[in-house]
Amino acid sequence: MEIKVQVCIGTPCHLMGSQNLIEAVQDFNKKTEIDIDVEAVNCLDRCKGAPAVRINDEIYAPTRPKDLIDLIKDKLDK
Amino acid sequence: MFVETSVSRISKHNEELCGDNVEIVETEDSKIIVLSDGLGSGVKANILSTLTTKIASRLLEKGIPLEEVVDTITNTLPVCKERQLAYSTLSILQIFNDGRAYLVEIDNPDSFFVDSKGNISKIDMKKRKVGDKEVKEAHFQLNNNEMIMLISDGVTHAGVGGLLNFGLGWDGIAEHFERIIGKYQSSNKFAEELIEVCNAYYCMEPGDDTTAVIALFREERELILFSGPPKNGERDKEVVDKLISSSGKKVIAGGTSAQIVARELNEELEVSLTYYDPEIPPTSQLDGVDLVTEGLLTLNKTVERITNVNCQEDLPKQKDGATELARLLLESDSIKMLVGKKINPAHQSLRLPENMAIRKQIIKRLVNCLRDKGKKVIVEWF
Image (cartoon, rainbow over all chains, first blue to last red; front, top):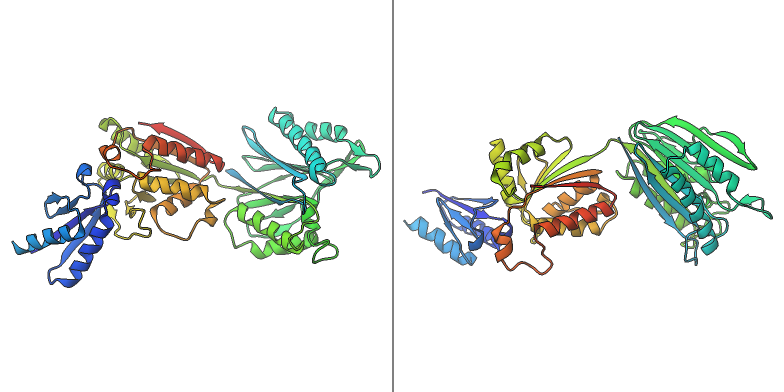
């Protein structure tokens, strides 16, 4: 099952730590068998809910890197 | 075409004021450089040279032909009765947009001419007498990437009282210049390094005011920057057309702005994952655009980068969005900005860092700092 993770690096998302989210996904990717396609995007239009991350077709606002990894694991389990 | 000018100088050791003075005047179709070296040093010399350059440049600004200005000043420049020397020297270089150049030298050392291949030579000057004074002049044509350097005698005397008996002389300076010709892109760096060399020969205690002015004739560099979505979405296409149809470098600062351009051009926007500087979001790639950065955070840092340096070659060797943008802006001579007025809700609601300014303020700061660096800036609001 393919997973596509897009992390927004727009102004508010960057300030809310998108770099940490990207690094967390890249680290996680090295440890799992499944290939995660991680990308940075310019704006997901969810500025009030920064940081914004789109996993496949849904947009989330994970507060911490751990939250994002949990979300990804959830998706993988399904 | 464009005339890039740079000045570098050091004052005589222990003097508070420099006795050399430089004025650069722009007329509709030319740039005029005036250099004067006041007799002696310190306050008196400063007043004398300032008077000379100010009078010359004011007359030139008013459109009085250069030949007339030369005659007027040489006839009015006082001469020291004892030493039979003019109270200040005078050099004027006028370069027109089409490359025509007129150079006048009165009591200053010979200027330097550097061709586009880096060959250095003296300029053939005709001598004539105006009153008691010997005036040297030359009319010639400048081609792309050719340079002229005017100097005060502190430069050719570099070393007197220091490392050399008779000073570096014209040839010594030419030798050093030849050595650094391929090293830099901007005239600023050449002028700075040559003055540093003179300072070194003076053992850091210059025996005289030492000034070098360089004029580099080259192609004009333009840049257009788009930042901030237009208030009315119907103008998106208009702005993108303006951006793409202009000549020169094209830059977008802002994620939403970049998406608008990508959409209108039907091109893919590829965002990099690399953070060269943790404070600055990564840049993106878009076919047809030279640089795509994030918006306000990057622009803020760009202002900082630009304010801290004299020219683009002094920027840190970093690849983050702000440094890349600063480099492109400092390389350009005229900059057009297309700025959208649509309010980004994120700018208002988020607790932004203290020195963070919203778009209008940050654009104003950027415009001011670019104008301070001598760039022509036009802003169009949408």
